[in-house]
Length: 156
Ligand code: 4NP
Image (cartoon, rainbow, N blue to C red; front, top):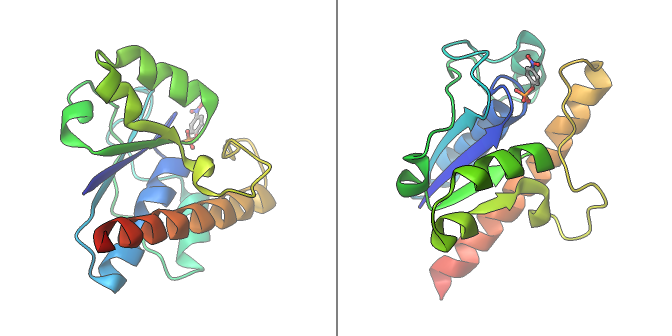
């Protein structure tokens, strides 16, 4: 199974989602490959935002080694599931899809948390530490749900 996390810049939300899921996958020794990308090209090659690195580090998750890259068409072939952080990311990625099968791979990350009122992971870039913490909590819950669903599918 290969999972791609996507946001706008690939320096805040998607590297966090990538890092948290990778951390859980490694701990549980699951056969899931995780990566992330941004729809924009502003930050290609950069490490994640320092505030997001610190927010993750406080919870024991290292994301400092990740480097931003832009989402590209070939990702539809490379990945089984593509999780986007917000509706803008969704529109951007869907527009690049060429088949219904490719479109079906794309889902909002928070659709994985059933009871969640928020449908989008808020962009923390211009926010405060509380916004970064909120992103962490949301992504933590969503990645738990992804793993749960993976384990259920594996048992079938
Ligand atoms: P991300 O956050 O999409 O979660 O990586 C952002 C990072 C950079 C910008 C916007 C959002 N920016 O405008 O540079």
